[in-house]
Image (cartoon, rainbow, N blue to C red; front, side, top):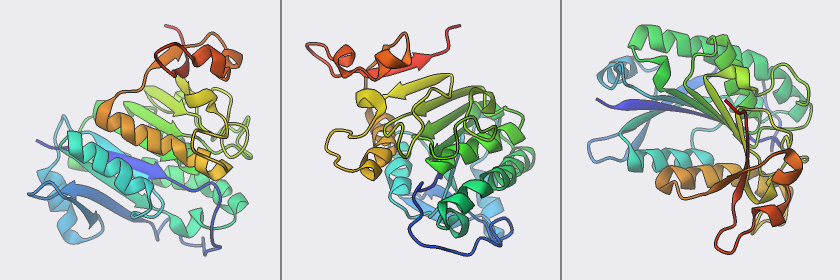
Length: 275
């Protein structure tokens, strides 16, 4: 029995203005599903055949992933292909480009409503198609991190795992709709452009700070590159689970690259809630 995966993404810097008047009814939900040869296929959930496809791949052990923005943007094939390479999963995609590509203030202001739509969709999916909340994993990049958090709260915090990939920073400090540990059973965040496009302060049960969590990340010269490094690193861990973390006592230690260096490893700082 296959499992399902959901991801959510958004570019914190909108590239083109767009109409955001129909981002709820006009949402497009997609599911990435492997065909008989294991190749990912992008299927529209609004098509009549999709529900039948969904049911054939559903069950108590299914894992759901959700992801938003353009179904064909760079983050999608990177993370989708990574999961399909190691698991038999379905990836559900929510396309909200009409809003995500508008002015940043407009896109950010619409996050709670998109999250509500998504949370209601998740509840419908579990109740209608079957599955278990303990197999639900939501992943969001930039503004998408706050969308999946809002969705998780709408769903009663029942999602097993929520991953925020460099959650968007501007306007999100001390914002009740931001990614936080109350969004799911376990919430994590990967910070790669903290203090610029992303939030630097800890927001989750476990916060990861690769290379100190700030710009520039190795190989990057601009903030947008460091911002995107979060999903690039996450995709690589799905395939090989090779990155090593070192538990830090505080955020100052987390951004201290000297603390992260040993003779053998460049380590990732980790701040987490102690049990």
